[in-house]
Amino acid sequence: EAQVTQNPRYLITVTGKKLTVTCSQNMNHEYMSWYRQDPGLGLRQIYYSMNVEVTDKGDVPEGYKVSRKEKRNFPLILESPSPNQTSLYFCASRSKLYQPQHFGDGTRLSIL
Amino acid sequence: SQQGEEDPQALSIQEGENATMNCSYKTSINNLQWYRQNSGRGLVHLILIRSNEREKHSGRLRVTLDTSKKSSSLLITASRAADTASYFCATLGFGNEKLTFGTGTRLTIIP
Image (cartoon, rainbow over all chains, first blue to last red; front, side):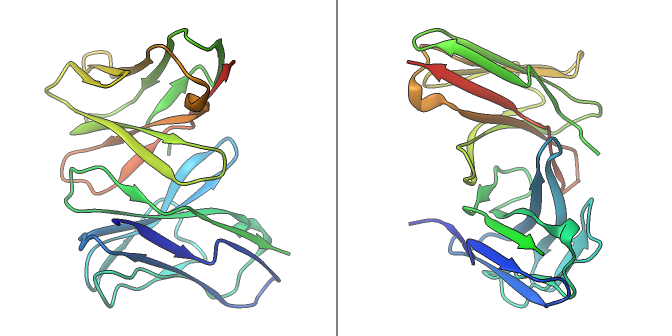
C-alpha cells in the first residue's frame, strides 16, 4: 500500500530535549515536505526536499533541521525544542513538481 | 504567508444538500488543489485543477477555477455524514515547489 509513515504519532516532551520525527514514503517520490498545522493558521511549510541531499527552507524553518540522505526518508529534527513548537506536524511527498501530495497521518508534539 | 483564503470558515448543512466552498488566492498559479482533512488526521487529496482548466468533476465533487478573479469553488453534491471534515485549497506556482494552503472550511453535515 502506498503510504507516508510518520513516527511517533504523539509525543510529549520537555524544553531543550532533542527529538526527531521520522518520515518514510514507499512510493519512490522525489519531493518531500514538512508542515506544521496550528489553529487559525492552516498548514505552513517548514522545509522541503526536491531529491536526495537537496533541501530548502519553507515559511517557518526556525528551530528545525532536516536531512535527506535516502530518497524514502526525510526526518525532522528539533535540536532544542521550545513550547512554541507545540503543534501538529505533517510529512508529505509527491512524485513530480506539479502533482498532488500524499500526507502522513501526522505527529502531535507537545513541548512543556 | 497564506495564499489561499477559504470562505466560509465554517458551514453546516443538512444531509443530502449541496455544499459550496470558495477559495481566493493572490498570485499566478500552475494549479490549485483541494484536500480534505478528517479531525486530527492527515490531508487527503481530492482534486487538482490546472490553470488552463475551468471546471473539473470527480464523483460528487465539482471544482471550478476562475483565473481572472483568482478564485476557485468546490461543490459537494448530495452531501453525506461522512463528508464532515475540513476542506483546504492549496495553490502551486510555476517553477515553485511550495504548495501554499489556506486556512480551510470546516464542513458539518447534519444527519
